[in-house]
Length: 118
Length: 110
Image (cartoon, rainbow over all chains, first blue to last red; front, side):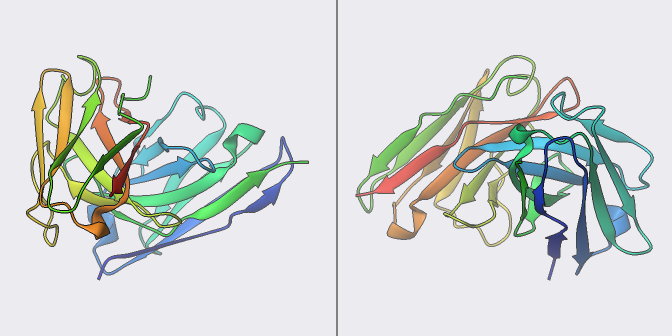
């Protein structure tokens, strides 16, 4: 069974940093591209970032480009999202998702809440 | 990248069919057949119900179907059941090598 479990969320002040992790199991992690998607409270889904299987090619939404860095450790079956210069508008539940090989999100973790507030 | 346009809400009675539209542009929905749909219950993670415009993942009810015409994709749920009451989001790959979601549609089963 595919499992994705995020961790690392919490309360951080504006301008601060946070690193999210996503532990993957139940599938060959290194065979799938991976994404982060976020959802602000009461709002819709927003794509954040993607990383290829090897971890050497990434894409970002304009709203996080230059502030967030996606990475992965295939030996540890773990996906990361380093978030710097955090803003109030980054407050959201962050979901780790697996790419189903046709540019869709076929499995999702339960999400981790990031709150940016002073 | 602007969000895809979905109706804020739709409703139907048990047994009926409903359709949710998802309108984008020639840079996303109209550019590729990489449109997918997600079902989300309150407080839960989304679940993939349609991918590649009209394909169903294993385990998803045959009552869910998808289609696309030009820049507009659609999700149809037939034989509406109480358990279908949820939020539904469309998503598309874009020519900018990003993904865009719709604003979401709240389905109410009357």
